[in-house]
Length: 330
Image (cartoon, rainbow, N blue to C red):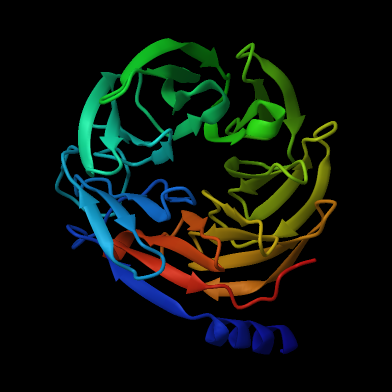
């Protein structure tokens, strides 16, 4: 009874502001959402709508970049249009799954300026700052395809190879201070890729049955893994990759996000339409602080620097801005 009352109080305290997206009527099959501190925008690849949307976290104003593939349909599946994007080097980089291409966007002009074909169906797109490269995961081929960014306006994307990740890769995050990238297998491993040699240099058991989302805290040397079955795990990547902490979450975990200023990890459970907020202590210990209501199928999230989480709402084609109701973890 006490836990039910606590949960009700938490749900009541969490302010939720829905932001409808252009072309989102009927739903959008989201896959990835990201906050860029440099761009000061939430980057929302809006799938079948054919748009990459940029949300200003201060004003809630939306800017739209068109020119991606469009498709009819609703929120089920995320195999059309742009579904992942990142910012780096003054450019936005995004996938176009329908065309199997990597797209370059002029971040100032808000328009597409270049494309490069991909060897496989893209999943995650990530900027690798130490190499001035863009890496694209292609799970169907068990590979990460890599491109060097050359030239000026527009830049050229020069393919530099592919990195094999058996039984993966699922998710992709960059740890620039350690010159490593992390990805998951679809089951119970997290792998570390050395940026210089492009080799998988470590494979750690993460305690998941179905490993999905990733987030990193380079300052503390931690990588966080979301487990589909309903769990969050912290790995000590500064040392030997051992499990530093675990916390329960609602089922259906996919994309997760970390807010360093609060030391909070956001773990949406799509099956339960609830997001668990997890506190992270300095050594990687995890503690579930409570849950906030989201939406059915809400499986992706990002966080800004001001205590807001941004959760995808596929059925309604919108983003839910959720003010974190919990105090910072110390």
